[in-house]
Image (cartoon, rainbow, N blue to C red; front, side, top):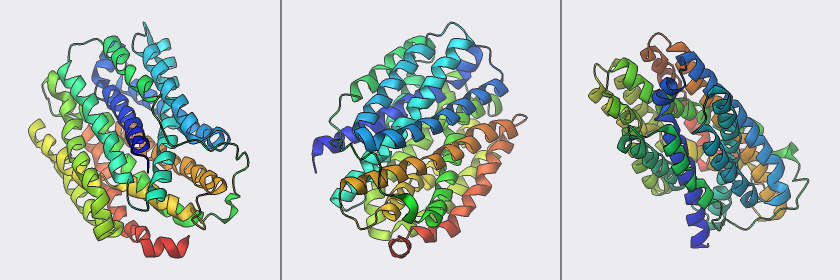
Length: 385
């Protein structure tokens, strides 16, 4: 395993997390700066999520031809352009254009960074996805700290400054591309039914995650009455707890198995959401998001690992095998955006009157992880593949 490749993949996750959280923790400022209503903000998030799905499908088409590393670099450069367009936008039309570009780049980077991570995990034959997703979380913490440290900085200045990050990461030494497989192995024998079950768990995670990172700052601002400079605190404890869980996730998965980890995490997450919904003040809300992050964090990386194992076939590291897995990961990435739709759009729409009601939706959905966890055992995955 090339250490430089592992560091490069982690850096791509870091950049994605930093950009995303630097945006979502500034949503109240975006709302007021451009005079958007909560419904307008919800529609903007809907557009980003839908175009991210398009970007993921685009990555599925391009990766077999030119290699996931090349497509990942293109996605990072697209995100850079989006920040340079949207941040200094003088009005809503250009803001929408910039956010549309960002949605496409977001989907491309999501899909291809997971393709790279899965490929490396299969090479070393041990769990790596939790710590890679931990790098995303570390980037998210950095983006949140930027918002906390610069509460009065202009949106344009922060966006232009953050744009340097994906620009630099685009030059990192990712796993060598193995393009040229224009027609990847037929997907006819891929076991889509168990992949759909694993995908359902992924939907639950992204529902909770997006509700936390997208609407947490608005919840602290509108419902819990947090001081303006501290509204980003909704995301920070959630991300810190997520980072700790994901750093430990590689070893915990290898030792206890994904099924046990998911079941315990689901119970902890329900407790965290209950605290958030019932929170009488923002300090209690901080505690709720901390508990939530510790419980829910490993669901997404374990879902991608499980989907890749189901798609792996004979396990040989051939061009056709890589193309097959890349195609499945890109399609599986759509579950990310289904969850994001529920988390960002429905949480905002249902919670128009009160976001407490909006956060009750993911609280109910998390309970589905208890029966779904059974599918994640290595024995079950091996029998279904």
